[in-house]
Image 1: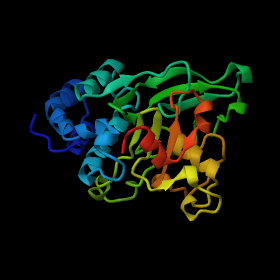
Image 2: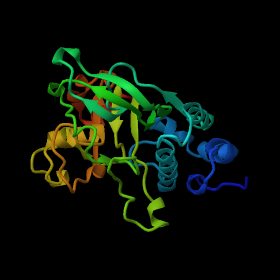
Image 3: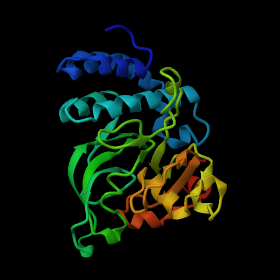
Image 4: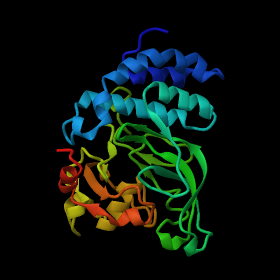
Length: 284
């Protein structure tokens, strides 16, 4: 296979492929060139090596292109689970599965059922694809079915059907990403929105500049969204209990959550000032 100068090239090869052996015919031959591209992105493994607001645009564009390829591959039947894991493991990612506890920092809801009793808590079921981490960077969340009583703040028909933000594409679900609507070439100059888990905190959309921990009702940066709605939207990348409200633009928001390993709903109430969390996590 010819040399590859970007992940966009590999995505376009996968998109144009019409055979039934995508991994063998397209992805596997592209691994050596993809590994070369990944070496240029190694600093993203640790937040302290690529602090908030200091990442090079070209590097964020490269991660975005790889995320578009990932969104294409997770559509069912593109790859076997083994092939998917092999490809991203070869690129240096750690594949992870969700445990019985639902954690929105690491889990994406595919389907939701509100049939259990409140005391049953929030549990995960069938997994559609594993999550991907590059060191401390949560590159892609694990996709799972979830069940819980509605009192836990996850509502069937909203949490699994509302618009999925920060996402280029999903099958059978509307998505919203700043790259949408741009021309064929312009859309590739889009940032990857970085989430990290490090030092006892989760840092969501680290390159944003509006901290939801200090947000107040009426702030113009909230785009007529309440503070609680905004926190839900940034944490889950979608509304999970509030009705969909068109026109949201969460891409400038950021948020730090203490003790992100706690399962939902405990993890929802530990929002702390972003700069303070960076200091406590020894990122600055």
